Length: 115
Length: 114
Image 1 (cartoon, rainbow over the protein chains, first blue to last red):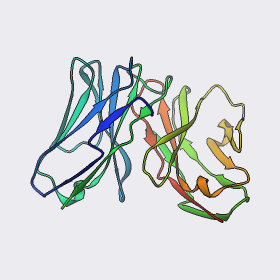
Image 2: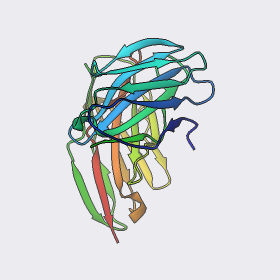
Image 3: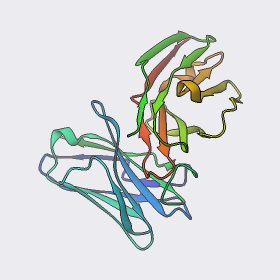
């Protein structure tokens, strides 16, 4: 158990729907990062939150949004889902705003299947 | 801009053979961090090692060893006496000191046959 909790583990939904993925960071970590792993794009950085504030954005679609709550858990909202959104979504956490020095702890991922 | 290249897409070996995974990175920063992660068939990302740019000492952990060479911008990973349980996708990744994200290479799929 890495200490980063992601729910649900699996999600199957239809095109056009909206889903919410949840991540609880490791105790004491202030930063949460979201990554998408798809077959054709590999592991892509989506967005980072640090202590409730958005810190950095990567290749995140406008249909996707995220937030980090006062208790530091984060949610990734995916709307108007398309078949191409099917992927493994990872959450990672780190103690500071820049994770390199302290490392990143990854959750076990949420596998999203859009049908 | 960061870039991590793992030129080997797939490697297949017979059990007990050694296997070396190549990783070449690009960065303009003098302070950066390099990582290796393992992704077994179950899908989770398992942390293997973190190395900062000022520490070029090679590291050995059991059957795993890492060779960091700044002169060639490489951070290669060797599995000695491979086992079937080593079958997985291995990712090399880079984070610059003042950056937020971890940039991953495309990954190398290692298959160890019994």
